Length: 502
Image 1 (cartoon, rainbow, N blue to C red):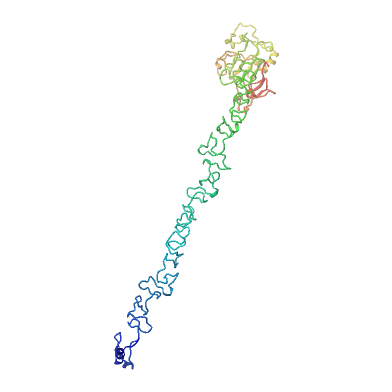
Image 2 (tube, helix red, strand yellow; image 1 turned 90 degrees about the vertical axis):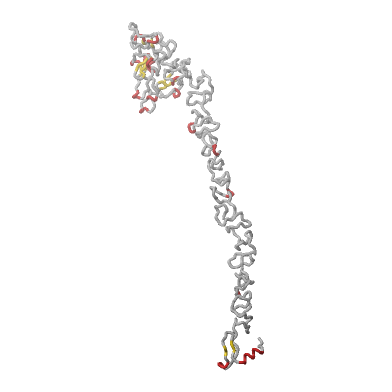
């Protein structure tokens, strides 16, 4: 700085006062001159760009007597920041002393990116973070973004909207096999585990599925199996179904049709079935065998329920043999049966002693067995000795049922009754039967203790130790009914015996 004349004169004139008020006397030091230059003294000294008389760092002349400017490390008026030498791209303070902020196009500290805008929908979000699934911002290519990577909520971990078929089991879904979902598979198209009753046919597992219409007697059972003949459930189109009990000899046939007379199959309530409902051909119109007595067909052998009690022929206890014309009572009502009061062999189904030589005059019997048929007891009757010659024994005894004598006197329960008493004499009305004298010398005794069935009994009356099987003479077949006997035989008191006459 050039020195003025006035200044020079002042400097040579003697003591001076400094800007601080201190007087400098050259005589004390041997020299005189100005105070040393200081920044802030208001005098621009050599090395100073300016001196505004203060040491304020952020005015136009800073505390170092330098002119204020961006990059001097001092935040001046109009500057947002000034890091001095650290100003610049990528720094917190840019080269123009502006703060590096998101959206200015310069990726500063803490920013993952900066594309010069605050648009959340592009690759760099409005928070200067790289766009990614789970950041809570729906970007291009994302259907949703709920800010998490949870797969089981409404927005999956890959930012796709949760839907059935995405192979992720969501709320309300019991399964999800993705492209393998199928109404014919284990996981349905609605993402529900296949189950019987859902109305969908699970291939290889279910035979059918009619939904709420599954069940008993339906085409599809509750187990999703087809209702078929033989499964024990009567389905559509089946007249019956007894399962393992179906059979051609059962009430329900193997084809699930009910047994009917005339179908050609012997059902449980039939003793024959010749495929028609005609009688007099060996099988009656009700499909029961017709048992001929000689060359005649009587009511107890015609295969019909003549008395309407639900029991046919020899199943009716009042039928003594197939040669019996009365199902309602023990009386046979055969033509000439003891009408002359001379009782012969009652069991050969004819009248007269010619073929058996058995004879007993009913009027001689003090028990009065013939009272109701005009053969009442007569104390004056003649020829009152019974005739039981060997021929009688040979012919009649084998025909007499267990518990009966040759003349039709039988022990029924605890009383002796004459079978030809009157039309009201029956097993259910023994009080209407007349008593009779039993002839043990011409009889077939009954021995229950030997498992023999007595007249008027059936197999249910046998003692428990018999096991439901009656005992018969050697060579004679035990039976429960006539169907178990051979041709020209019938079941009498548990044994198969010949029909007489043949």
